[in-house]
Image (cartoon, rainbow over all chains, first blue to last red; front, side, top):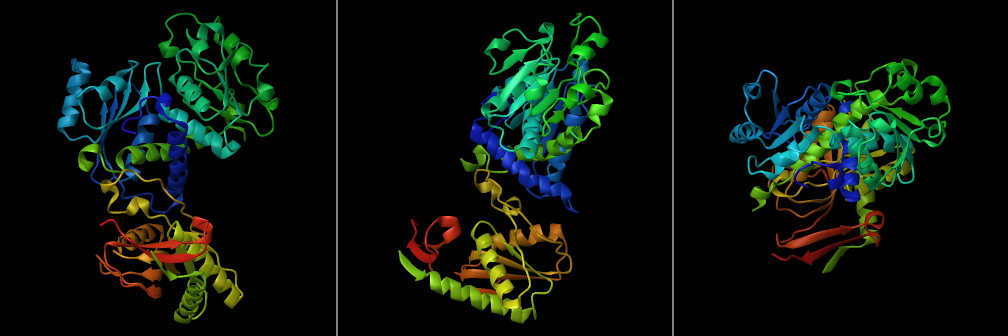
Length: 310
Length: 177
């Protein structure tokens, strides 16, 4: 594995290796000294062209716990706002000796471009590109589900809400399929992407029909900032038909868990009582996120790079 | 290939090591046994079981994966991590590290680094089934099952029931070098 660009690139073995590695690394968070010397002397650049708090600090915490040097680069207030291209930014980072670039970009495919150009020699990790993919989120979701539900083969995962704008939904659908889970996407027809028939999932417009057989329900944020048209009549109607409230939650099987990639719109796609209930693993997802990202960085950077073995 | 220890030899060596550990530390009080996966792990379990047998007090062995502390990470492809399970707080305890073969001493150096981040043991001791020499660091074992003079090109292989699905055995094989 040289880069992590898409959940689709991961074989079942790759995914299981990442999850198992993360499980060992999760123990580090419980120690008095939360630090490993493994990536000492490696430089990781967080290249964020789009606002993000949790993903960036999660990657930053992961890199620092492995003793890597972290450079944070956000497009706001940088040379990008003066019109610098992705290529020139990448060349600059290469000149500074970045061993890995964690990139978030508003354009789908930007990480792919970066990885397959000759602009940078480092490993590229996709931390969310446009409405395309967010593979580390899918990995941490799978990790959380696995730790709560056991092996994911045959488990029913229901992903609800704004699938159209969601890179989380796409990455999850691909990864969960690789791991053998059955995925159902529930959304109003306007919020399902064109071509969803080719995804390895079932789709439904009716949340009530799906809750009773779900082992895990993942609520997606309604991404108002990406919505430039009316996708549903009103927030209230959306919330009534596709929001997770207590009544719906109580119809879930006893072992089922409620997930949300954050940030939440409380009262919109998820009710506050549900978000704070025992079934909600939303805070756990954040903790697991650091361990999963440590695993990804370790597996990409921990060993010999191609130049060093050559 | 020549067999240098069979199942009985290994069992006897472990029994002797157990008694030496108890002799050195008076009793099992405050002793934590940590094996280095995968085979050190198994040997640690056996030593702990023998201590329990001799002393009558329950002793649980743990395991300590040192992969993330190795100094040769950059020379090989990334390796999968193994299990770390430290059963109790190691502050002010005597930690006995257990490994199957001691050679360069680099694994033990990594283990000492790993330990120092888990706490501050009162003392750290080292038990190995086979010491084959060729040290590259100033490290020595406190308890040795068998000293085995070897040439560097030879390979010492330890096989155990639990990890290798064969009879317990230590053998020397001619290496490719």
